Length: 115
Length: 112
Image 1 (tube, rainbow over the protein chains, first blue to last red):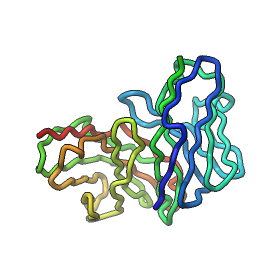
Image 2: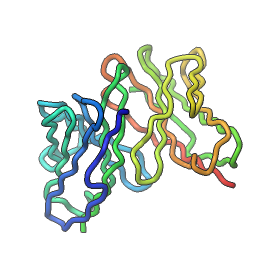
Image 3: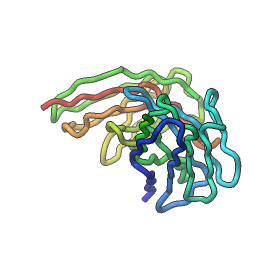
């Protein structure tokens, strides 16, 4: 149980285009999902907290207009990287919170490469 | 959230027991300690969680002393597939535990 999927697993796009990444909780409902970014050989950095039916809460330094988050249902959150640039190339990981201890279950990640 | 400190890296050999210690001097009363494992290009995977004393599951054991200012993840008889980065996190479960702050983690390298 508690499986989280992400789609796509990897994407390559041209600079200036927008890319949407989906995060789904497959066998549970999650009112709260999180989006992280991880650069090579670095730790995960929380970008934003996504709450179903409300606006996302962004961490300091993360541009909300660039990284659009939509949490339209209890099983799906999407992250759209708008007008992507090469510096946005990174590993994007989502997690979904569930269970009595608010445990976070992580997706497999999405490798974004912006040319 | 309490800050955590772990060794940057550790080396071991197959079949050995590995103990990774994490310091969290500012842990709060309601904080739980959670360990995650991450392989390259994959999301973190939950290993074990505890509040005090000892917790054991099929994968690992977690030792937490009485003052809770540190914790030790114990991996029995490691194999090559245990080579990964291990993260120790501390957070308040019942107030939401909503944000996880990942430290640098410990890169464990298991050799034949």
